[in-house]
Amino acid sequence: MSAVIEITGLRKTFRTLRRGSRVAVDGFDMVVEAGQVHGFLGPNGSGKTTTLRALLGLVNADAGELRVLGASAPEQLGRVAGRVGAIVESPQFFGNFTGHRTLRLLAVAGGVPTSRVDEVLDQVGLRDRSEDRVKGYSLGMKQRLAVASALLKNPELLILDEPANGLDPAGIREMRDLMRTLAESGVTVLVSSHLLAEIQLICDHVTIIARGRRVAAGRVDDVLAGHDPHEWRVRVAEPERGAELLRAAGLTVTGHLDDVLMVGGVPESELISSTLGGQGLWVRELTPIRPDLESVFLELTAGAAPPRQPDGTTPDDAISDETGSAAEPLIELDRTDGRRVDA
Ligand SMILES: Nc1ncnc2c1ncn2[C@@H]1O[C@H](COP(=O)(O)OP(=O)(O)OP(=O)(O)O)[C@@H](O)[C@H]1O
Image (cartoon, rainbow, N blue to C red; front, side):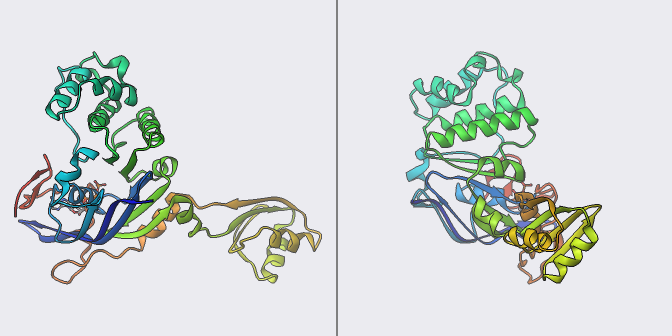
């Protein structure tokens, strides 16, 4: 497999008028291979959007190497721009235009054959509503229209920043189905989100970022397995005695409620059943507690140290922005429209 995105040692500091410098991304690495549906997961304000912007040349990195389809960013991005579709800013459409007209205009502006319009409308499932005005679209339909616009040039790589943001459960499901369909058609997808369950459902690989740093990366299954506490839910008739027997056998009983024991650190269930069964205590239930991405995520992101700030400190307020939005005047980048403003 070849790397479609390679990020090494990315560092980005924002300078704000009021608070001075703020490190948003701190020595961050990421590799996305061709054909992956790669989740880019992190809490609000952890540096996801900044990373994607740096990758797309929307913001200048302070340090690090970024490559997209083999081209170094931002210098050589023009060489591969036609092969990459991205939605990093929420796109704004003219409400009075129909979906079809919107895409036709974008196709003409982008030098793409207008025959692509119906194809992408089919791909995102908007063909039936394509003659309706955009202002009548639900948020989910607008998001799909945005994805359709990114698909016009038939990209090999699609980068989506929080595509499920603000969607209701039906909209989230539509977006999920769309991403699966795209992946099946061979498009590599990098999708950022703070919605763990979504990432677990649609992505095969994941990179987890916390406070500007990578805290985990790999196949979703491997990341989960690496944090498997090997914990079991054990139901027995005599829980007190059961707990004693298990402890005597060197096992750890982590919890006890009515006739249910929680037993941790045991890779194989046989150890539990033979310990109890050997003493005539029959196991009524033996269920593995599998970690989900949410518990792994919480474990990984809770312990992450904040990025070191330019003055050598690691203040919490540098990374505690819940919304991830900059509420103060900015020198470098105006987040409201994503314009690049040279510092
Ligand atoms: N233009 C900017 N000026 C100043 N600080 C910024 C700017 N953009 C981002 N930041 C700060 O950098 C940090 C990382 O923000 P970023 O938007 O990359 O995080 P995120 O993971 O995408 O968050 P969210 O999920 O909320 O979108 C935050 O502390 C944020 O406030």
